[in-house]
Image (cartoon, rainbow, N blue to C red; front, side):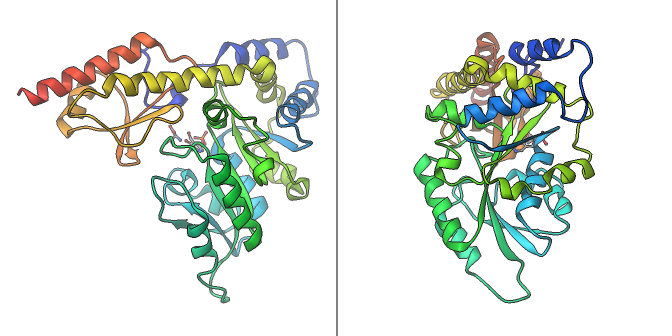
Length: 347
Ligand SMILES: Cc1ncc(COP(=O)(O)O)c(C=O)c1O
Ligand SMILES: C[C@H](O)[C@H](N)C(=O)O
């Protein structure tokens, strides 16, 4: 077993709540393709958690969730307004464009990945001629790809602008639980109550082995989504194993306990690094990610000590924490960063 790494929360294993629910769901046979009891239990559990009679679907990963949800909100000749840092733009390999049969992603320059009503209006009102792919939907990521949070008021302002412009609002919630935990608000307060039409709610990064939930708060927008999933190879035959972890995670608020641990782990690393001269936090630690700038040779030394981290997001080195983050490993990472910085300064 490799020593714990913090390159991504995707590196973590399956949390007990998800695993135990999978084990329980494994008893006997069950109707396939989502007609089983676990799938209806999971959908009901999400409707209860969100206090809304949303239409709920389960897919294998976040790219599929985002791409198929956006394809439901946007015709092939229309466009999706997104932040320049948006995962749908930088890391989904054209899947949103592919599954919408050609919708265009129009990116707005942002401050650290957060869209604003001004940026949205600037794109939406820039042109209305036949040659311009008409904007149909705005997408925001909560927390953002840079680990920052939209406040509830910021989301409300964005959705108000969307309504004025006749646009739908999609939320990439790959780390939604981390945002709910960090803002200490309810899932409803951060979605439909502030005008979000469709949420892609992360299960994988939250601690499941696989799986995301797509919640349509406006059921009309979900028309045909089941067929869209089937056509895209996202209709699981043994859906109970995608669905059951949601029952386990949502029970007694475990998903938020795990998220609180991940968020506090990120804050711990941020604190441990703050007195190292060569290391700067590139973004404030608001959820479960820490982004730092460090001299290139410090990064090389850190990699030589076996640490893995991405450097292609937010022009910084990213460390991201999950439900299982081990304090001892976090302290070891901080110590190695300190020693690698010290040796750089004194070489
Ligand atoms: C912000 C964000 N959205 C969506 C995704 C897509 O998830 P996946 O890689 O499971 O397709 C990721 C990946 O981790 C992500 O970081
Ligand atoms: C960046 C990569 O695509 C993945 N979404 C992650 O956050 O690890």
